[in-house]
Image 1 (cartoon, rainbow, N blue to C red):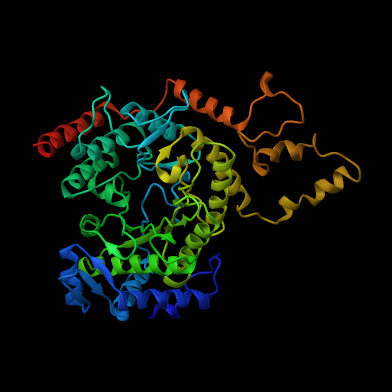
Image 2: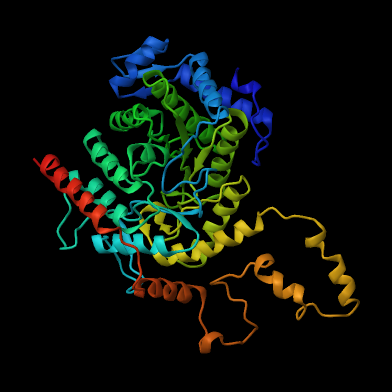
Length: 493
């Protein structure tokens, strides 16, 4: 069935059904006329066999619309049959939500130390502390690698070939909420899967609840790099989450039109999905986007501009409504460099746009377009996330919730504050923030006036002082260490 004839669900978003159809048709035209450069030969050969026009000299593939539609239809049928679609990544926001919600992820190369306010490269100890923080925080359900493991506990630089395995091992040891980490090649993947099996208990349990893999990217405009294609093909063949996430910039790497950004991002995702489906016909695939704009005043990428929010909401609506698929949007990336007014304003806007579409597993703690991680920012954003979840929660309108008998009992001019009904219901029916200041004007809380920023810093410090922070049991720790030692012997030859 052509995608334009199937509207899968009522989904909030900025576009009408007719406009969604136009964007879909526009993406098909881009793929048919301009095409996608597919650098991985293991993907080009199956595409040619499936009927695509493949130019080996330029590595450009032009896709017949029917071939793309077949891929969309296959995924729709698989999802309708009950098969889970993982849009798996630590900095984006699909509809699927882990049990507790928000995410620690990002593989950031900078760390904003909450104890010194210093911005510096992260160390192994920083990563461990962040993993334990994510484990301890209520509202976090997915902990990947918020910072890259660039230096080990002794301060020595971690070699490139070992960074992914070392990082996954630390995540496995210091949190039960294991999420995504980087994977660059097949040798990485085998070790990462072994660590995942130790954490989950078996290969079957790992397949049912994957970890230690992540999304890969196309590069705008219209390029599907060889390494990314090869890694995604490896994931697809192993029935692991296989997610394609482009990062188009309006006015930079795509035309200066937010609608064109959506069209081109969709063309890249559909082209990559079609290539992977041709090579691995039974794979479950997923898409996402981290879109932005090119700020013409400063010559920098902006991920919090209103146009970026429109772009993310529009393409997510397209996948929800027209394709019947989940879709991950770039809620994690903002422009602010430090926690404060700008960071919370930007993140609140992005979270609200995601929440309106039923996406609540917000990535938290990321600054400077995903370059920097701040635990203080993460704690601040968690309070905003909880507020938004409360705002969008379903409300029952029934006899109990209307409390008409209580109104009659107290009567005209009475007070409900001391009533038994209030005592029984205030925790359930009223959200109580941790950091937002609701004290009366001029009141000093806990003997000292403090703002949200200071309270967030205090909360982080209090968590790190605890003596019950998580660490995996000794038996599984030894098994993980054995995998890391074997990886060093093989990867560092």
